[in-house]
Length: 385
Image 1 (cartoon, rainbow, N blue to C red):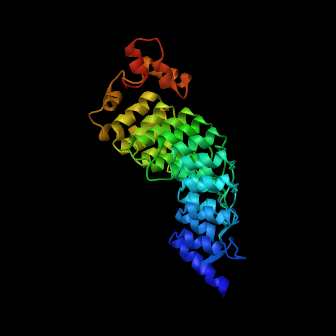
Image 2 (spheres, helix red, strand yellow):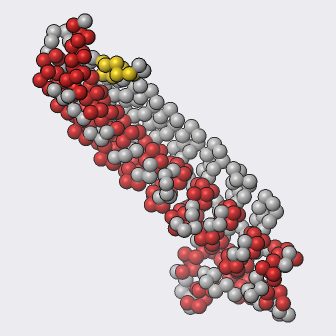
């Protein structure tokens, strides 16, 4: 009963940060500084963890000086270091690390302190890494600290972890990589973070357990009113993302058909400029040209023709009267009613061949060519006819 009363008194002293009372209790004969408090029906918590959670630096020093272990765990497996990291109490973190607290202690959920720090504080991440925290440790879901940094859009933390050797292509239990998590998480897309992951050799073509890829996830999460989506798609294409792969989780459509379905006109234009397969049909058998004309997207339809497609698709659209009825004042009407035809001309065929030969990054290459501005302008599809 006497021990129970002392424990109760110590808890009150900690709650009120009463150092003198706590010290008098800890000096009692046979009193164990590793004492635990039953704070709920499901969890008993060591006194030192209570101090860490409340940020009581001096009270924690008192417990440690009285022989308390710095690696005690509550019933969920959390240590004082877990609690201090969660609340970003830097002084307590330094105190614990100086007292040889285990920087790689694992909770019942597989979380190390670094997993928690990567969600919020770059300073704490640096402290833990310098103390020997493992960069690629996985929690029960297979996520690493880098995974959490990407989920929470912490570019600075992600950069630091990668620079220190974190695996940029680590997969969680659902086969999500940091790149997929970065694209699929948060309220908005973070182009800076995604570009850095790609520069660090993140695989742009990896798919998770649900068949989701970086390209298709970026298109789904984009808005045509936000340039971040275009920046991310451009970054993926510049880093050898497969532009024509079909998405198994979205009716077998490729990227350009998905962008049309979601009215992502800027992304559609980007895909056209990077040389996507304009002859591909969607699951309903419709061509890119057919869908653009049906949606009344005249400029994009013009770009498709200028970039070069199989003429059977043009003839299909003509049979459907789309080129004439949907666009009565466009160049398409003249194309089909002129005896000589304005399209295709030799200069158009030459442009198509040049762009196909230059390949994926043809726009960037064309801009560097020593040619007259009018030719550069034409090759860049700025002059469609």
